[in-house]
Length: 172
Image 1 (cartoon, helix red, strand yellow):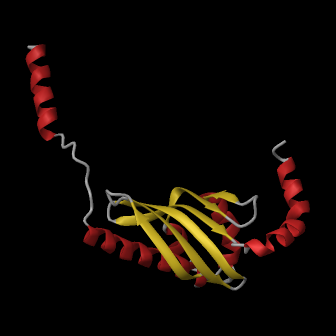
Image 2 (tube, one colour):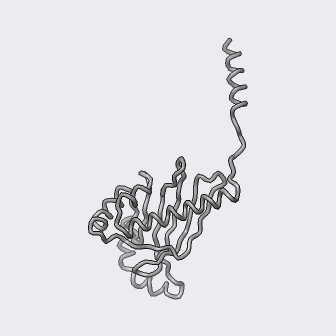
Image 3 (tube, rainbow, N blue to C red):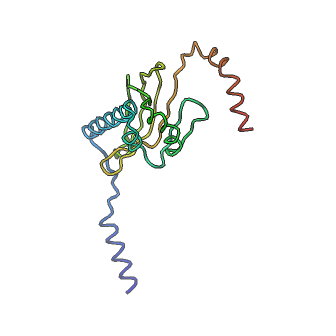
């Protein structure tokens, strides 16, 4: 009897298990990229309007935000705590995408992107990872950085050397 149940279970498992991976068509990928483009624009717009709830609702509970300072590797909660006074004072940040590249996995449930941003401090760069949960995209990881022209790198290293040395002492 147990053997028959095991055989039946195995047959049902094989019958209902579809081992073929799911692939989005090119059209579906383009549609998802448009949704992601809108998601990212809305996320940045929420910050520019100092709309705390709209901004942080787009971030997963286990998300990470990495800022421009080497010490800024924040969980969502840490980033919320850092950001709350800025949002409360209606002085959050205003980033506008100058250009953006969006990439999707074949199943269409993970995306990664990079973007050049116009900010009040000049051109910044953002990159991140999104996950589609149900029908909604969610930010899981975002890295904000300042691109430095290669010709200026030696000067920047001179300026940051002292603080960089102090930061690296934490790891020795």
